[in-house]
Image (cartoon, rainbow, N blue to C red; front, side, top):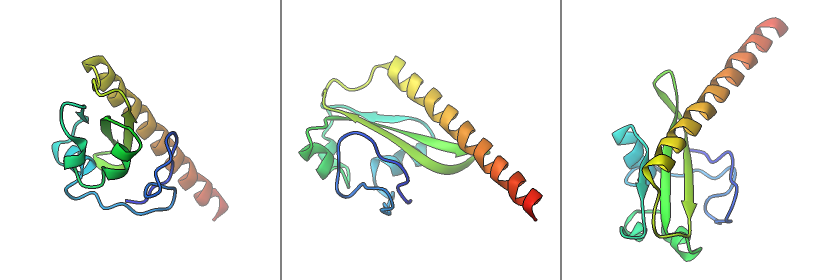
Length: 121
């Protein structure tokens, strides 16, 4: 999956334009389970492939949510924080809602782009 947007702590292997393999990663697990996945400081995030740079940057809790359009995965939203306490149930629910809103915005933009292309043809 290609990385299109990054904000927050700089991680050299997670810059815009980089490709990222998801098999066996936390994001891959989220895709397989079809729901928001989070791990906290009680679970070693270092056990997941691709998390070395996050732990080196002091990040201890990670949350991953899917961006879906009509049942198809179009992206992944990942958040991390330095607090090892993890994410509360309310935060997980909010992350799912935010991911749904982002997916809706992306879908609307895709439709808008398609309409513009049809008008220009």
